[in-house]
Image (cartoon, rainbow, N blue to C red; front, top):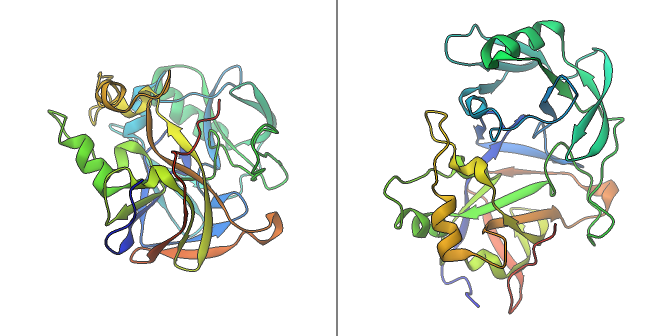
Length: 282
């Protein structure tokens, strides 16, 4: 059971406003009831309303997202930039996220046309309004409110674990390729597997689940599907049928008190460590 042997620091902070599109590196971020503010509040869906990810459309990786005063700005190769408001007032529809029907708002016909031109097909960008209440499944003991994330509002990886992975790869991957919210520097590789409660700055978290990885992390910077790094992780880190890397977390606070602010450089304190890795839920 690794224990911290040196100071631990929040060295990078990311949000991914559009699920499966490019992320944004931040120096600071507010924390809200669903996670980091703006994280995965938008999602691309197909003509049936079903989630579209880099697994189906690898070119989503090349969609760059930036924050502006009144919304997002999207960019992509050979495409004009597109403005997306923070709270769109479009048509109400139902989006399908892994079989879960979620009341959503269509951003705009212009946004749909932009996606159709770029990806080639029938797509829409939808937004999760505040009125949509989504929580972790009943079989998970944490009950956190969610945006369009897969299962938990926060994901953490460490610099040491990433370095260990990259030491086994012919072509190293970046932290952003693994799509974490938090990157932690200091300590030993995979120490985070055993954490149960931590505090970053003044914000407490429960470390609740090992992140089981999928093929999205295999999409290259050129938006091509490859075998790595999932193949190497499967060889070196497999747990049953799952390929673990990183930790999923919820805020350690009552549901009506999940607020705070984080900034790069905040110290991380490990409050509770276990003898076994965190579980994997399905």
